[in-house]
Image (tube, rainbow, N blue to C red; front, top):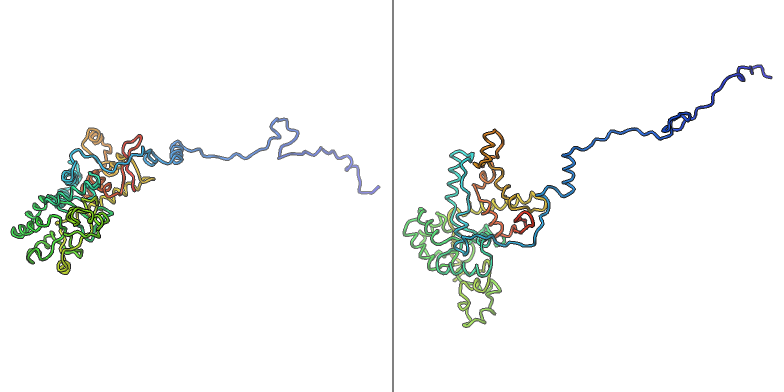
Length: 402
């Protein structure tokens, strides 16, 4: 027996090894002792507002962001009780261009005078697109315009270098009486006005005149005041047979006398169903070489700039919606914004010291657009084909960008 072996090794008391499973001792009497332990994690619950926002985002946004349920009916024109023909449509469009300055405008006297002066100096013209928004763009409407031109009650002014047929600003209309009023209010001498009006009466459908029609001094005076502008375009008195297939040679040859006069002469394009512009050429080569002067009116440029700015702003408001469409009432509210008014609710809020809306002077309608009416701009965009009106199932009329 080795000497290093002693009784201490054999007499040592040993306990059975304690085995554990997942740090849980077997001899535990707990019924959950063998259950696996997991580390608790802290989770943040969403607030009620966040849950509502998530639900809206899942459904496609707010009510104004959701796609409108259309009935399928598209409105090509707006219904105006007082405008049933071309002349009444022109008169209505002129009178409805600007809104009246509210009593609580938030503008000083200098700004108010600027707005009133601009509104007063706007020419009494109406774009052809605006007329088509009130009265449908049909051959019947074009025949009415051609008839009014023929009898000298209406003038058509070709906008050179600015408008085009697609935007609907290539032509504007003005009544002969309004044009005579503009001439009388200008600094043009009475004899120049009389000679100019005589030329216009002899050429009721002309959109430009030849330098030979008036003395050079008269042309200079009318050019300085804005009633004539130098144009590189050809004259517009006689009809070009190549202007449209509606007035092509086969159509004229089947007429009774086989001439352009049999189908209306200068008005043949409109009488045969044409809509828009007919290409026209000058009467003689001398007129073309001399350089014709296109008819115009003073302040036509500011009018077109304001018109285009109003159209662009309306399309920007539509572009804020997801589908570039929205209810008509909502678009009107965006145009006017939350303007402070004098109604009973706004007055009560002001007395309580609460917010009653922004002042008109802070809105784009009055800062940049000088009080353009929402309905007027809507009709402009509708006639130009930039938007379309449609009926919805729940929110009335809807507006959609095309």
